[in-house]
Structure formats: C-alpha cells, structure tokens
Image 1 (cartoon, helix red, strand yellow):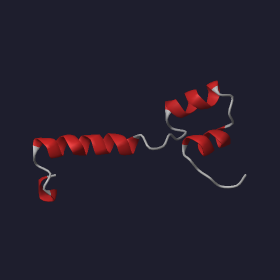
Image 2 (image 1 turned 60 degrees about the horizontal axis):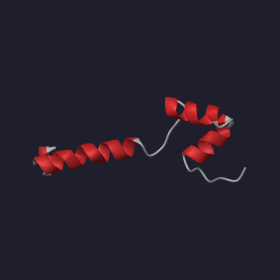
Image 3 (image 1 turned 180 degrees about the vertical axis):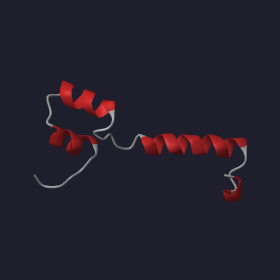
Image 4 (image 1 turned 135 degrees about the vertical axis):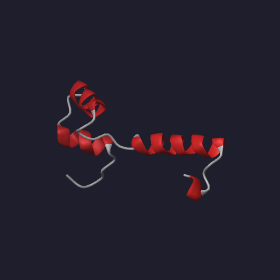
Length: 59
C-alpha cells in the first residue's frame, strides 16, 4: 500500500474498512447468508438473487 501513499495508520484502517464494505455489497449462492435468508423467507433462488443483489431486470 506504500506505493499508493497509504502507509499511515489511519490510511491502513480505511483500507481495511473499504475492503470489508466491498465484500458485503452482494450476497451470492456461495455465501451461507444467501441461503439462510432465501430458505427462511421461502424464496426461490432466482427471487433471492433479485432481492439480495438488487438486480432489477424484468421477470
């Protein structure tokens, strides 16, 4: 991260937060959270994708 100018303690903390935030943007079928929400809500996987990934294509 040093070549990017991110070598300070605050910059390192912000990089970790950015990585964590980016990792939680969407839930996919390889994520257990996807299946917990989908199954307990009685959704089909297709509906789960549309609702959990904010996919807005016509049905």
